[in-house]
Structure formats: C-alpha cells, structure tokens
Image (cartoon, rainbow, N blue to C red; front, top):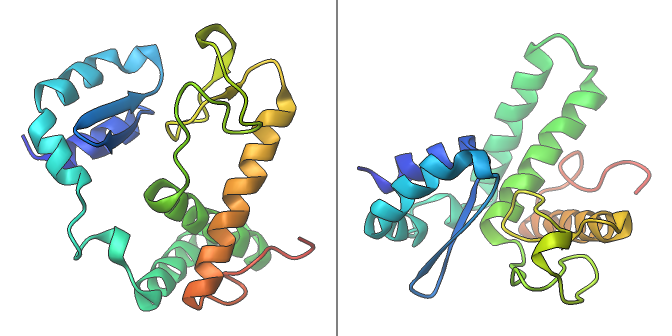
Length: 171
C-alpha cells in the first residue's frame, strides 16, 4: 500500500503522524484505531512517505506557496458564502495550518505544548497535530495556538509572502 495514501487516510481520520528517528508516532482519537493498525502494519511505507523527498510540499518555494494561496482563495470566493476579506482570512489560515503541519515545532507528548510543564495522560487534550496540552487549562491551548500561528506567519513572511498572505489585519 502507498505511504502517501495511508497518510492522507490518517489525516482524514483525524490522526497526526510523524517520524521520531526510527519510531512512528501516531496521535489522535480512539475511533481511528483501525487506521492506526493499518499504519503500523505498513510502517516501512509510511516512514518512507514521511521522509519527504525534496520535490514534495516540504520543499516548496515562494511561488508554490503563493499558488496554493491563490487556489484556496478562489475556492473560498467561489463558494459565494464569504466576502473577499473573509475568504482571504480562510485561505491564509489554510496556509498557516499546512506550514505548521510540515514544519511546526514538535513537543514531546509528555510535555504541554502550551506551558512547557509535564503532562499526564488523564489531563491531556490533543489539538490534532501530535502535540498535547493541559485539558483543564484553556490558557495552554490558547498560548499554543497563538505561538504556532505566529511562527507560521513569520515563516511565510520570511519566504516572501506578503499581505494578504501575511498577518491578519489588527494583529
């Protein structure tokens, strides 16, 4: 089975999958357990797909990110449900999410991605990207979200994406 197809299925099931050395790390909802079993059964293919050779999305240049933004903007505008400003914000958000999934900071599961303190299994919330935050402390999830969105914005700006792909108005 093709590793990229398996990764797409994993994402559709709400799973986050990444390689940590020779370990395959999988985080997500319990309902996705059948998909987890398939990923484990096809670990070599999945690990190969996770290695992201240079021609893949991880190595995209400014032109490719700009093209993706234009495509996403047209999708949101084409729906007829959003103003141009709203569609720009949605397209910007999609790029940030994509950048974060490819390049974002990876925090060990034993550490809260929001505050950096140790985290126990019973008090964890998985935001869907393989990290965990304290469940009972909304501030941890908010801090983590602000931090990764800021990092994604800065990285996209550093590549040369300028507004409207840059920071949202008022931020």
